[in-house]
Image 1 (tube, one colour):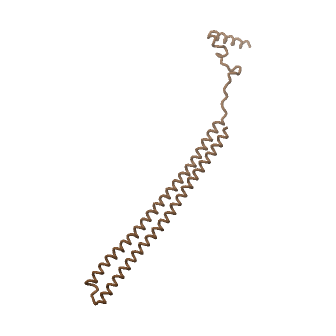
Image 2 (tube, rainbow, N blue to C red):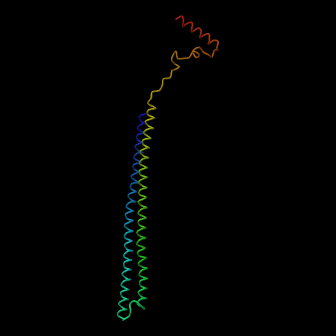
Image 3 (cartoon, rainbow, N blue to C red):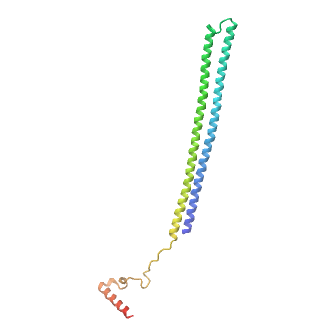
Length: 203
């Protein structure tokens, strides 16, 4: 039975070790998934920021074209392009175009920074998952070692031969008080004890 108990302890320890490995593999899979999501988030944010950058460039180009058109129209009409109505039109288009350009550039920056923040959070979650996997693996190892230790201790305890206890059924193992029947009174016990000593000396 002690050998069977040790075998069961070893099997239980092996199962704990394998369970720790399985949990570590699960957390490693989660960590890799977070890393892939982080890369996708950065890539997606980069694409969105490029859209806003193109929008900003288009706004700048549109503003410059409108300013050139105003200068050309003013020059063809023999008007001073830097004063009067053409000057006011250019101020208006610069204001509108500059505002649109600033919004587009701000959206580009916000999109890129938001994507970076989300990607960094996903990388942090990946690191946390790896730490949890390492802890689960260590728990499996320590649990297996503890189970093996307890099993080995119990096996050693049950394998030590027990101390022999004198049997009361063996002749000569009874105490004097039992052999001479204390249930008949202390006086009779004393007399029988003295008689036994006399017989011993006669031998």
